Amino acid sequence: MSEVPTRIDDTRGEPARHRPLAELEAGLRTLPPAPKDSGRLAFIVRRPAKDAREVLPRARLSPEEGLPGDNWSHKPSPDPTAQLTVMQINVAELIANGQSLALFGDNLFVELDLSTANLPIGSRLRVGGAVVEVTPMPHDGCHKFNARFGNDALRFVNVRPTRHLNLRGIYWRVIEAGDVEVGSPIQVLSRPAPDA
Image (cartoon, rainbow, N blue to C red; front, side, top):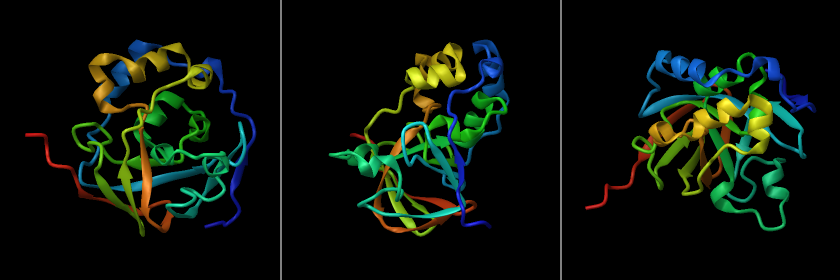
Protein backbone atom coordinates (compact mmCIF):
# COMPACT_ATOMS: atom_id res chain seq x y z
CA MET A 1 0.00 0.00 0.00
CA SER A 2 1.40 3.41 -0.96
CA GLU A 3 2.44 5.75 1.85
CA VAL A 4 1.82 8.82 -0.33
CA PRO A 5 -1.66 10.24 0.32
CA THR A 6 -3.98 10.88 -2.60
CA ARG A 7 -4.70 14.62 -2.55
CA ILE A 8 -8.02 16.08 -3.68
CA ASP A 9 -8.26 19.87 -4.05
CA ASP A 10 -11.70 20.17 -5.64
CA THR A 11 -14.54 19.61 -3.16
CA ARG A 12 -17.37 21.27 -5.10
CA GLY A 13 -19.35 18.17 -6.02
CA GLU A 14 -21.25 17.37 -9.22
CA PRO A 15 -24.89 18.56 -9.30
CA ALA A 16 -25.69 16.04 -12.06
CA ARG A 17 -25.04 13.26 -9.50
CA HIS A 18 -27.42 14.62 -6.84
CA ARG A 19 -30.07 12.03 -6.05
CA PRO A 20 -33.71 12.90 -5.34
CA LEU A 21 -35.06 12.19 -1.87
CA ALA A 22 -37.27 9.30 -2.99
CA GLU A 23 -34.28 7.59 -4.61
CA LEU A 24 -32.18 8.02 -1.48
CA GLU A 25 -34.96 6.64 0.72
CA ALA A 26 -35.45 3.67 -1.60
CA GLY A 27 -31.70 3.05 -1.67
CA LEU A 28 -31.53 3.08 2.11
CA ARG A 29 -34.16 0.33 2.29
CA THR A 30 -32.03 -1.89 0.05
CA LEU A 31 -28.79 -1.55 2.03
CA PRO A 32 -27.77 -4.66 3.96
CA PRO A 33 -27.84 -4.30 7.75
CA ALA A 34 -24.62 -2.87 9.10
CA PRO A 35 -22.75 -4.95 11.69
CA LYS A 36 -23.49 -3.96 15.28
CA ASP A 37 -20.60 -5.25 17.39
CA SER A 38 -17.66 -5.63 15.04
CA GLY A 39 -16.90 -4.05 11.70
CA ARG A 40 -14.12 -2.64 9.58
CA LEU A 41 -12.44 0.67 8.80
CA ALA A 42 -12.99 1.20 5.08
CA PHE A 43 -11.60 4.67 4.22
CA ILE A 44 -9.42 7.33 5.91
CA VAL A 45 -9.42 11.01 4.95
CA ARG A 46 -7.36 13.87 6.34
CA ARG A 47 -8.33 17.52 5.79
CA PRO A 48 -4.99 19.37 5.73
CA ALA A 49 -6.57 22.71 4.78
CA LYS A 50 -9.95 24.13 3.86
CA ASP A 51 -11.41 22.33 0.83
CA ALA A 52 -8.41 19.99 0.55
CA ARG A 53 -8.48 16.25 1.26
CA GLU A 54 -5.86 13.54 1.53
CA VAL A 55 -6.92 9.91 1.30
CA LEU A 56 -4.63 7.86 3.53
CA PRO A 57 -3.88 4.13 3.61
CA ARG A 58 -2.98 4.30 7.33
CA ALA A 59 -2.57 6.75 10.21
CA ARG A 60 -1.82 6.95 13.92
CA LEU A 61 -4.74 8.33 15.93
CA SER A 62 -3.92 10.17 19.15
CA PRO A 63 -5.79 11.98 21.93
CA GLU A 64 -3.72 15.11 21.27
CA GLU A 65 -4.06 15.35 17.49
CA GLY A 66 -6.95 13.11 16.55
CA LEU A 67 -5.89 12.33 12.99
CA PRO A 68 -2.42 13.96 12.67
CA GLY A 69 -2.28 16.67 10.03
CA ASP A 70 -6.05 17.14 10.00
CA ASN A 71 -7.29 20.73 10.28
CA TRP A 72 -9.09 19.87 13.55
CA SER A 73 -5.75 20.01 15.40
CA HIS A 74 -4.81 23.34 13.78
CA LYS A 75 -7.72 25.22 15.34
CA PRO A 76 -6.91 27.65 18.17
CA SER A 77 -9.05 25.68 20.63
CA PRO A 78 -9.91 22.30 19.08
CA ASP A 79 -13.08 20.81 20.57
CA PRO A 80 -12.39 17.21 21.69
CA THR A 81 -16.05 16.31 21.12
CA ALA A 82 -15.57 17.08 17.42
CA GLN A 83 -12.19 15.36 17.00
CA LEU A 84 -13.02 12.68 14.41
CA THR A 85 -15.96 12.68 12.03
CA VAL A 86 -17.23 9.22 11.19
CA MET A 87 -19.71 8.00 8.57
CA GLN A 88 -21.12 4.63 7.59
CA ILE A 89 -19.57 3.79 4.23
CA ASN A 90 -22.57 2.29 2.46
CA VAL A 91 -24.71 5.33 3.33
CA ALA A 92 -21.93 7.62 2.08
CA GLU A 93 -21.70 5.68 -1.18
CA LEU A 94 -25.48 5.93 -1.64
CA ILE A 95 -25.39 9.71 -1.21
CA ALA A 96 -22.17 10.28 -3.18
CA ASN A 97 -23.57 8.45 -6.22
CA GLY A 98 -20.13 7.83 -7.74
CA GLN A 99 -18.38 10.92 -6.39
CA SER A 100 -15.32 10.59 -4.17
CA LEU A 101 -16.11 9.88 -0.53
CA ALA A 102 -13.47 12.46 0.36
CA LEU A 103 -16.00 15.16 -0.57
CA PHE A 104 -17.89 14.57 2.66
CA GLY A 105 -15.11 15.97 4.82
CA ASP A 106 -15.37 13.06 7.25
CA ASN A 107 -12.23 11.38 8.58
CA LEU A 108 -13.27 7.75 8.91
CA PHE A 109 -15.71 5.67 6.90
CA VAL A 110 -16.73 2.44 8.56
CA GLU A 111 -18.69 -0.75 8.10
CA LEU A 112 -20.61 -0.47 11.38
CA ASP A 113 -24.06 0.53 12.62
CA LEU A 114 -23.69 4.15 13.84
CA SER A 115 -27.27 4.50 15.06
CA THR A 116 -28.04 6.00 18.44
CA ALA A 117 -29.48 2.67 19.59
CA ASN A 118 -26.31 0.78 18.68
CA LEU A 119 -23.69 3.37 19.66
CA PRO A 120 -25.09 5.67 22.33
CA ILE A 121 -22.98 8.57 23.59
CA GLY A 122 -20.09 7.24 25.66
CA SER A 123 -19.75 3.94 23.76
CA ARG A 124 -16.12 2.87 23.40
CA LEU A 125 -14.63 1.05 20.43
CA ARG A 126 -11.29 -0.37 19.42
CA VAL A 127 -10.31 0.68 15.90
CA GLY A 128 -7.13 -1.08 14.87
CA GLY A 129 -4.76 -0.23 17.73
CA ALA A 130 -6.66 2.86 18.95
CA VAL A 131 -9.55 3.23 21.38
CA VAL A 132 -12.21 5.85 20.64
CA GLU A 133 -15.37 7.09 22.32
CA VAL A 134 -18.66 8.35 20.86
CA THR A 135 -19.13 12.02 21.80
CA PRO A 136 -22.36 14.01 22.28
CA MET A 137 -21.60 16.42 19.42
CA PRO A 138 -24.38 16.16 16.80
CA HIS A 139 -23.16 15.62 13.25
CA ASP A 140 -25.58 17.41 10.93
CA GLY A 141 -25.39 18.29 7.29
CA CYS A 142 -24.47 21.91 6.50
CA HIS A 143 -24.43 24.27 3.52
CA LYS A 144 -21.27 22.58 2.17
CA PHE A 145 -22.97 19.18 2.33
CA ASN A 146 -25.97 20.70 0.51
CA ALA A 147 -23.73 22.12 -2.22
CA ARG A 148 -21.87 18.83 -2.74
CA PHE A 149 -24.77 16.39 -2.59
CA GLY A 150 -27.95 18.45 -3.00
CA ASN A 151 -30.85 19.70 -0.92
CA ASP A 152 -32.57 16.30 -1.02
CA ALA A 153 -29.47 14.63 0.46
CA LEU A 154 -29.44 17.21 3.26
CA ARG A 155 -33.11 16.48 3.99
CA PHE A 156 -32.40 12.74 3.81
CA VAL A 157 -29.79 12.82 6.59
CA ASN A 158 -31.78 15.14 8.86
CA VAL A 159 -35.43 14.02 8.62
CA ARG A 160 -36.96 13.13 11.96
CA PRO A 161 -38.14 9.57 11.13
CA THR A 162 -34.57 8.38 10.44
CA ARG A 163 -32.50 10.92 12.42
CA HIS A 164 -31.72 8.27 15.06
CA LEU A 165 -29.85 6.27 12.39
CA ASN A 166 -27.16 8.98 12.23
CA LEU A 167 -27.03 8.82 8.45
CA ARG A 168 -24.81 11.91 8.36
CA GLY A 169 -22.52 10.25 10.87
CA ILE A 170 -21.23 10.79 14.39
CA TYR A 171 -18.17 12.12 16.21
CA TRP A 172 -15.51 10.13 18.04
CA ARG A 173 -12.68 11.27 20.27
CA VAL A 174 -9.48 9.30 20.73
CA ILE A 175 -9.03 7.78 24.20
CA GLU A 176 -5.91 5.66 23.52
CA ALA A 177 -3.45 6.28 20.69
CA GLY A 178 -2.94 3.59 18.12
CA ASP A 179 -2.31 2.76 14.49
CA VAL A 180 -5.18 2.25 12.05
CA GLU A 181 -5.28 1.34 8.40
CA VAL A 182 -7.84 0.63 5.74
CA GLY A 183 -9.22 -2.79 6.66
CA SER A 184 -8.52 -2.45 10.39
CA PRO A 185 -11.07 -4.29 12.53
CA ILE A 186 -13.49 -2.31 14.68
CA GLN A 187 -14.83 -3.82 17.89
CA VAL A 188 -17.39 -2.28 20.23
CA LEU A 189 -15.80 -2.52 23.71
CA SER A 190 -18.57 -1.04 25.84
CA ARG A 191 -21.84 0.79 25.75
CA PRO A 192 -23.20 2.90 28.61
CA ALA A 193 -25.94 1.27 30.64
CA PRO A 194 -29.42 2.51 29.69
CA ASP A 195 -30.90 5.10 32.05
CA ALA A 196 -32.99 3.51 34.77
